[in-house]
Image (cartoon, rainbow, N blue to C red):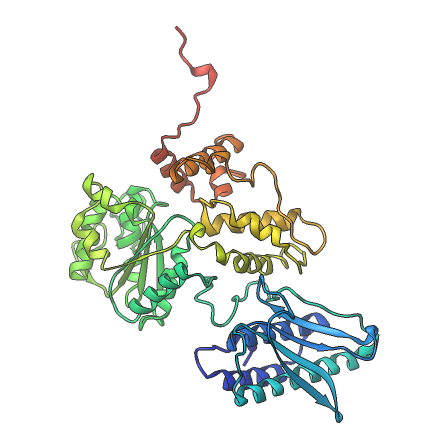
Length: 481
């Protein structure tokens, strides 16, 4: 059992805190103070979630300033010490040596006795671990400088927390509505259509649907329909037999066969060619298909989760997407909110990206100024969460010390036309065009515009076609009168 194995949904708060204390007490093999600090921070973070608090703090004031130390986990934007405090003294050797305090969110909120007892037990475990660590290094607490950890510290690569929704970070009303829709449809076998702009996390939501379904033990297979040329998409989905075409030297299974019994995620379904749409419709209606070059039908049991950023209603009107396929896929639509509609989630997203990347970048950040949050929340974010991730990584490389500061270069600033009377499509068009110009119109290769925008090259080409963006013709090839 580890701290991150605990799920607040599994047990009531007091039992969960008791298990948390047991997991913390059984932790062994940590490599000194840094890893212990991480364990303590994880425990404090879990407490704030279990009791719905703004912060949790373990401190020892000592007899003088040199003896004091403090461990804090604080929700982004909360102020330590100004909220109503629940204090639990920790008694050692007949005297109160430390204090465990929690800043509760509701004024005058009372904690049940069972939770108070569980918090007291957890505080004792944390103090004992800290005492053991300092004793093992032959350095008493009196010799330590005050320790403050205001940043939520997680190990790089781990989930943000045990109760996060498949790494979908946020608590805004718009995001919660989408999560509730996932919880409604996941236990069923209904087809799901995820609608949203690029960078809103469609694959994460598709995985959340799969992992909460009865098919969770079966394969989750994804296909990006925009990343494959029309000549290969059919064999990618349905497979082929040996000799079906030039170069088919062996039989190959398609994604439908691989996903049999599980979930197939079709990303950018709006880019699917018309001939493949007809074959996909047959699979959805009858559960049968043939490999390319074969006349033998094969049966599969696959749940489809599709996603697109296109307006499929307009595509049907224009004849680019089959109406019967649309109604088969759009059984349960879920609209994913863009980042500009959930700016209150930006502080949590920023800390998530910082803690995920700081080890790889050999950096350590403990402070993010309020001005950084304010600047990020004012931006239009046409690239949504993916764009935010790139901006934060740039800022981490740019910053010095342990305070994060934004890299305010022209490439990281929003376009000037993003404000005023410009429409969202105008903003996105200008953003894409600026990126292409900065990268000298390179779409493939190192340092290309697609990589800068966080898009697949084929997706970028589709955006250029949609916005009518064309590469300037070299001067040497222009015709003159």
